[in-house]
Amino acid sequence: MTLAAAIAELEARLPDSIHRDAPSGPLTTYRCGGPVAALVRIGHERDLEALAAVVAAHPAVPVLVVGRGSNLLVADAGFAGIGVVLGGDLERVELDTARARVVAGGAAALPVMARQAATGGIGGLEFFVGIPGSVGGAVRMNAGGHGAETRDVLVSARVVDLDRRASLDLGVDALELGYRRSALTARTVVVSAEFAGRPDDPAACGRRIEEIVRWRREHQPGGQNAGSVFTNPPGDSAGRLIDASGLKGFRVGGAVVSEKHANFFVAEPGARAGDVVALMAEVQARVEAATGVHLEPELQLAGFAGNGREVS
Image (cartoon, rainbow, N blue to C red; front, top):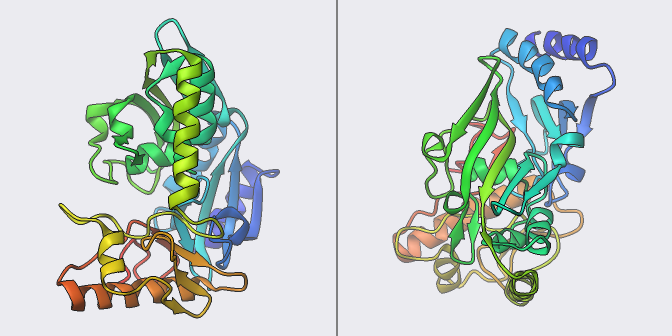
């Protein structure tokens, strides 16, 4: 099999970094889902060269860049491909306070970057504290919240195209960032990104950070969830449409629509990934029947039929 051959090659090239049949639950904020056939932990950019050599030689093998798993659901049957998790040197955050710039590795946690920038007197990045993802995920999905988006502050990103075995430095225009999308493919890894803030008083930045955290606790649920399940349709809110359709508290198995925010689905202990995706499909159908609006998933799905974002 091509997958078996690819895994064997990875084990030869990166013997201490490969884990077969790795549980996906601990890698995602939903805490459920089946195993990843081969999980590769990358701590240095040079390790991506070895990964790219294998991926390029086996183009039919699916690749899943996991990030912090805050916008990801893996099927209960698992993911029959190569999962990639970044860490180590790729979690570093470096501040250039003189220019109010931040350079962060693709694995850096957005809340960590936001707090370090604030402490260093770099404003404008506070909104990232409310997004529990990675820098790489923010670039790939143009993550946003509290009136700001990644493209508002992003200068450039360094990426590795696994298929082409190429390292590229891309300006923000080349990334083609739109609403929860970019030009990056699923087989492109964000190594690092540079952000432009503004000089500011650290205390003022800190107050904005704490206000965002307070708002998040007040308006968004805790527990096992992945944030917004559906993108907002033009001129409206997915959460409002789900609420207006009477679906707060609606459940399928162990997955339930949050009473606090209708576009957040919570996976209760023991829930299966299949419960979450079935809930998504049922909510889609009921909202469309009630409002005429077809909601589009924001949540990334791996290992399901079609292996994409669509659930219908």
